Length: 348
Image 1 (tube, helix red, strand yellow):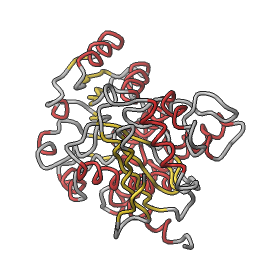
Image 2: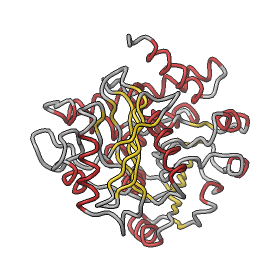
Image 3: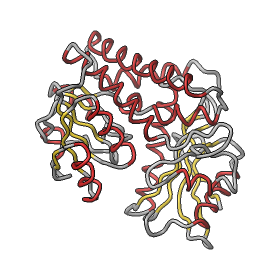
Image 4: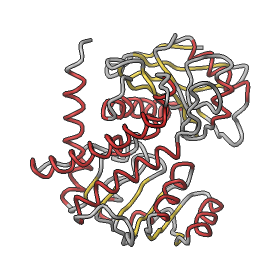
């Protein structure tokens, strides 16, 4: 099932195949310096194996940074399955992936990500114990999406305090791109906070329901980044901050739940040159892995532990933004530097 691939940047990378179930995918362990690699399982339509491999490599690296920034004793890993989750996902396919993960003997822990649910995690758990995000059990953490959204909201408050001198989001106009599990929960929290919402999603039904529930304005997914808003919140796929979109961005601040929002490292400097405050994505969206970590680490009671770390994550974002201003750096550059220094201090 597992074919090991050579990688100059990652500790372990595997192609995963099971012909009986139709499973095709990849598992990447970027770093286990801080602990076992942890990161979700994603299923989506890719252009091909090369695109899926590139995604899993980028996502697993991001998880190393995310877990370190959140202060968790976990390394970074990720898994992806090629296919349409609405059409191709079957119990047999999920159980085959569970067997593949089990072969890594705990060096990688998975949980739900795009295209996955707690019910899917339960199917994987029939084949491996190295899965979190379950709905039931002594330390079950369930869907991490609401906690991810809460972390993003906290990061937005830190950014608002830096940019406008107050952390209130009441009256702020937020353009949300992507209305899946996390995007919808973020819209709910922003609506409760009194923010004005513009929203977009490739699925018209998601956009319609969000407009009805929160009084949001629907925007074409191709132009949501250009809305004249206070905050742009990317909550869909990565790479949305690129040479085409950056000149068109209408917001003064970017803070969202999507992973790998910067298409290239240079994109951070392009945003800074335009006077746009970019909040490093892996710091802003760490709430979900904090929630999952409580299950992996078997924390009890879990609620106060998660709350404490969400507060620490918001404080860390505020520290990054203040220090980046003082050192005349992009917050993304500074955050990377801080995490890399942290990882280097850990003995191999």
